[in-house]
Length: 336
Image 1: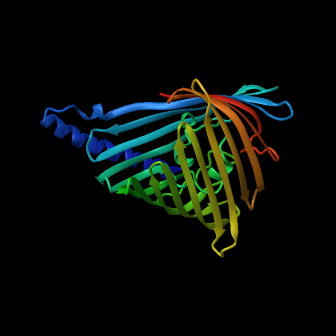
Image 2: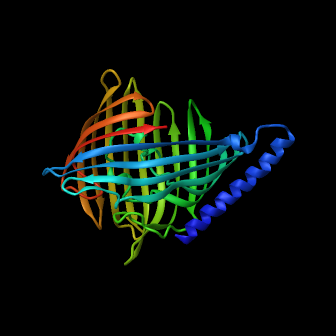
Image 3: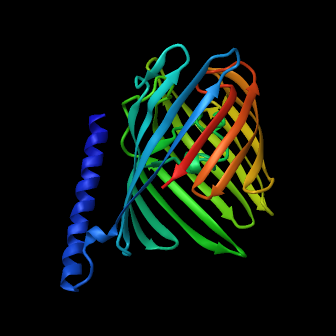
């Protein structure tokens, strides 16, 4: 935890130092100061879950703040600071804030050498699969998240990344190489899985049909053991006349070659009318320490604006789990 704080302080100090240099240059050229490059934004969502058996809970899911800096030069700064579950209501118990915690979701500096080569340093979302890097509530179609997108690899990494893009026929080829530099020691959630020594790469072709390949090596840093894995993942997404088809599959192996977990999901979004969409998803998941799980989701979403979405869904399948609730869910999310 202390190391993470030092990393964040160092990143802020570096960004402010560079900003001061940029400000001095701007003043000499009678251009706007560095404060003009700062922008604020964020998102929030709230929802309710009616579980099988009659229990219910409702919560303010998160309040997330984006702080960015970009003066049009080569250097850019991005941060996402989030308060998770600040307020929760449980049937028979009332409202509480005991589940809340603060999370530094993202905090990094980008340096642009060219469109084909960029450098990133700090804390960023692990570029594995498609869902993990766009999981903000206003940007996804369902309140529930597929287990395979969060239980087999770290959701974020403190380290370095090299990334870029290049034209490829009528498409674009994108690449990312990343490596962890600072291990995350603290555990924000009781059900979270800590990881260490993560490194990997991702390749993606974007266009009318988008598909990606992810490769990752990491270790589960559990209190009683540290097991190392290698993982490969494939994902796709295609949109046509309002329809959207997407999916991911991940296969994880122990370093001795034995299976270490797997999972997949397939999701379909169909346009209805007046900003309404129908959603369906099937998924499966297997992690040796947790066993296997199967889920299905049917629901609808109303998106009057790209920044606002109301979600209604029912999640069924096998036994309910803490990290994968079942029943009827409704939520509203807004991006600001």
